[in-house]
Length: 268
Image 1 (cartoon, rainbow, N blue to C red):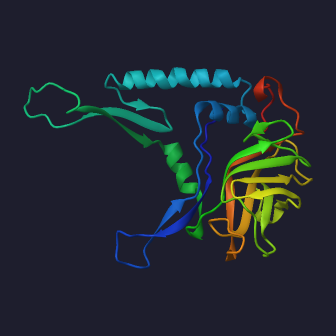
Image 2 (cartoon, one colour):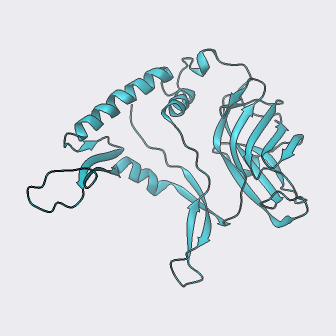
Image 3 (cartoon, one colour):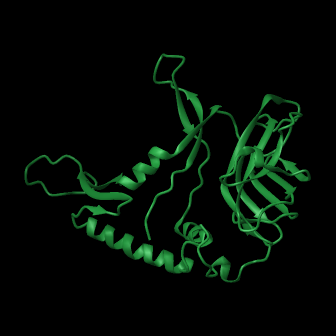
């Protein structure tokens, strides 16, 4: 199977660069960013349909290679995982040519660098400047209430519950609302939810609109004029847009046996 690291799309906000006196000097900070552990990454691989191995098999094989590489690296070897390179060294001052290594004066360090495939994907990754930093909605936990799955699925005409911060949808701009957008599709294809059941700063519930395509991946798009505090009397002049870091697979709401690790042919 030919390997290829797919480029992505980063979104960021600008902040004044306080290290310089130039008032027109800004830096870009990436918006959001979830933390994925091995279990979650294994589940995403299974959901992609790129393998018939179970999540447990994928994780086990990864651990076997990763742990053996670290073991060999800690014996003084340079480890090339193709996607990144790993090498260990030593930090600390030695006061004589024959001084022994002693902790905590000395310590073992690690250095990593990306490989050519990752670097090529970085060069092709799109970056969108979303303007000055603001308190955007953070959609940390997304629950499909019909089957209880968390950060995994969405079902048409069923209730989706979102937990996080800065979640209230407020404002009279026509764009204000919560949307579902199919991953990779243009912004004008977003489907707006018309029934909002709960609209609080840390909890948002709404009825998922119809028209979602089974087995396709979707992302939530949150547009509001609410201030950072969620104060209903203080609205921003212009709406701000936030994107969920989680991608949700459209299903019929039925729980998949064995935690969603069924074997199925490739679809991506």
